[in-house]
Image (cartoon, rainbow, N blue to C red; front, side):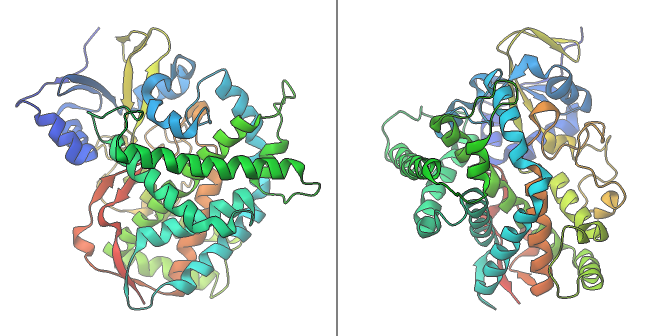
Length: 442
């Protein structure tokens, strides 16, 4: 049984500082030196980092029942409760069965209408010629989209306070995601108090909205109504108010922050590669002219689709997943006792020179013929939405939103990036562009 390569500290706290400063970059550099799977000493902790397709397939698909979130999402559960993102079987399996119909592609027509409306409103408010943050604009757009998709116009008058509450949550969760030494969230600090107050504010509105919706005779056909009516096909049971709250909070958080970051990265990459921008603009002009995209038109826009998929390869929003062994297991013939924690890093998989030609190069052509985002179809070398039974339940909605938003932005104008050659990544809740990508709208 060969051990995994082990990378120990060279200088006291050296790895801890490197992980805090740039975890994706440091892990990528380590992978390039020692291979895709390794153990890494970080301060007093030893991390097991896995990125080979074989290891990812084992943990996420072949032995998915043996690996769960366990204690790795303790912080997240304060916010998301036992929502689909944070739960383990048997609750996770019951919730997945119950919720799956609400995310069926049969709802795509309504999703498209909501996304188009929100995108065109956003474009109408961009300050022509004046500097603005692309990421903040995308966050407003995707937040408005997910609010309307989930709740119709029920929370329209609370848009700004909700945005403020999520800004607090995203800041705290983002900082804690890269901190290896952190106080428990129940420790009374000003930042933790703001975090709890933001959750309490959102809870108040969510529980009130659930109660009102349950009492409505003819409610709107949005995701809230679909989830409220959803039942487990095996037991016939629906969701309690608490479980519904947890799923709404999970969908809200996952449904806008990650998508906003993917769109910001797509804009950044096109700003750095004007030839690709010209090619996709020509494709849009030929297929759509000035008209809005339809569900049918996306089959005629292979370059637009390829740009989104290549963006997801280079900058997968959920760049790393933590899994805890729920029972004894072996990964790559290495014994993993119950309680072992592994870090599954698709960021490394997507940039492995043994799996991809010129892996650090933005090259949408590699996705022009194969448009799948299914990990199994790619042999687990490409998994932007995870893999196995825990694959992202909202991946169709996320992809549709990315395609529609990017198409409309390219149709209506052009972005002039302030510093296209100095774009860096940063780690928050998901992988984002540092400094928000300042730009001007032309």
